[in-house]
Image 1 (cartoon, rainbow, N blue to C red):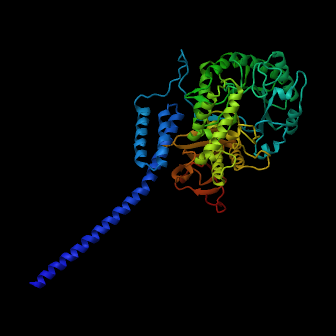
Image 2 (image 1 turned 45 degrees about the vertical axis):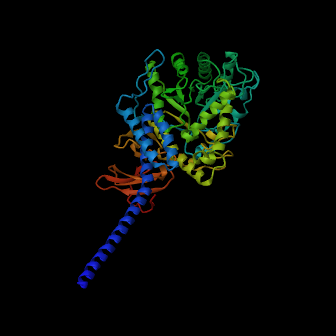
Image 3 (image 1 turned 60 degrees about the vertical axis):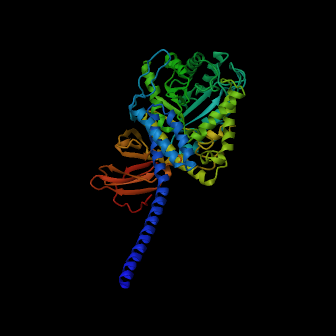
Length: 591
């Protein structure tokens, strides 16, 4: 009897032990599962956020009103920083509903309505462009004062550059010309250099508004003609392009009416053609800034197109800010010219990035600076408003950068790690921005800029966009990225974006002189965090036996094709793909 009881008790004890062990195992498993979920949840939410942001950027580039998504984007970022993942999921779901509404429930693209008329066609663009001559150029930058710099232009493997000069500098007093800066420039260029000179009609004696930095209507059109004629004549046919007052849509750049601008354009055109019949006139174009889906000061340029279309050879649009909106912006102006019954080639005398205003943190600073100006009661047309706005924006960025790694990248004393990151973004941007601009049909591009003079108030925007330092001593990584791009696209004849299943995958087919083909490929990602994401695989179909792959930083590797396919690892860093004709591939290292 006792043995039976002991036997039963022994069984119960073993069962109790097994139950305890099982419970312990389940508890451990539960803790591990909770830990894994806690670790994976932020990662998954971050991936969801990146997808949401990419979709938002894509919709924006196609002309949709994404203002709601931009607000939600800021809220998601804040919730993520606070580790409030439940809130992140809730906001992400709300954003998905907004996207569905934009895509499928009739929240249409913003229609192009101009007050009382519906005359602008939908912005549809081609993805292929052809070139009769090299499109690449680099501008000196702000405030040219006779510096010798052409050797850097040649080192970049290009032959096109431009400088900007003011009426005040060339003719400080009526009839008294100072050719020092112009002659220094002309003395550097040879017969192979294709030069552009931009002339700004700002003067303290000859213009309606006497100011050293902003343009306005001449007091005497005869004096204006003489200034332009004498300048062009001085160049002795060494300069191919001349441009009048640029960014007239920006208050503070041109202080006058559209009617006055067209009058000066006609005089400018006449003076250039009579002084140098073979020279081409570029109308001082648009800043590239859009209000929603309409260019700033649209009615101003409508007047230029309607009344001045016979007085320029090229139209100029500047391409800063979001690079993925470039095709939309370029084709908006192309379509508008067609709608008004004429066509002119489009060039870009200023292109560059990244700028701080591509990021939400800086956009908030921009709005805050504007509000401060309003309180100070600056008038919109006052040039000092523009100057002080830039100064305030710089000071705000300096102050707020303590809490923002993004803003820290653009201040002068940024931490080394962030400075290196901005250099990498800059190198990518050069290739991406040029590729999108060229495939949109921009005939010529002058990158802004080779160097940057310390113009008060501009450093936060342009200070780190240049290819060299202020003294022209140090070449930045972007210098070599630009140089590499030009060499890869030497003899460019056509560029075309190819369709892929993934809309965030940008694949371009290049045809160079002699029929040689190449490709450029990257994935669209968040500008700041994109490089932290894992690569994706892409199967590239080709008849090549070996594919040479070079990234924007100059790292090279070779992949052999199998049955006409090669598997590529893609990130936000653009890759150049070329055929490697020789068999020996052992000298190339992996990226």
